[in-house]
Length: 202
Figure 1 (tube, helix red, strand yellow):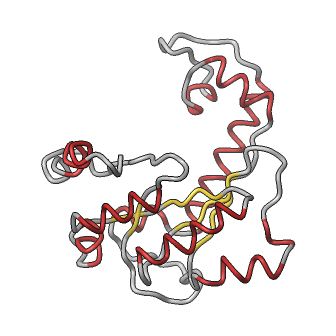
Figure 2: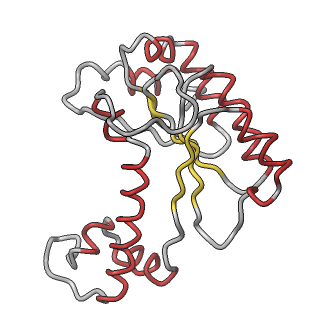
């Protein structure tokens, strides 16, 4: 996407002309920094600083040094903006909290950045949702793609329900809905108080 001016035009030229209140852009691994650079070049980040656009950045982290290096690059483009660093546990891997030196070298270089943890979903439940080819909420509701009743496992639906509730609790903890709606949260601030560039995406 960063290399295509046409793609940018298709996405951002319609921001003010659509009835949608939220636009979600999914940038594949390795393209976050080039994308942020391009957003800066077209004035998108500056518009967010002025409050014209609500821009939320979800930076999906992996447990590798290369993934952590991207934190520094991202902070450089967003300045003092708060953004969400998401630890997505797709398996039993570990992140770098156990290594204090590594943790200090990366995470603490962005004071006040908010960490979100996405827990691992039980493998069998994840596989069944994939096989059913339906959204998680549809799987929980025991429905097929057509809306007809299904016969998914009660136990696996319970695992998925609990997993989604845990993620929703994380979003509530960081006040995500308040940010997207442009309202002031009544919760105490997370981390060091910072100017709010209402952020979104990765």
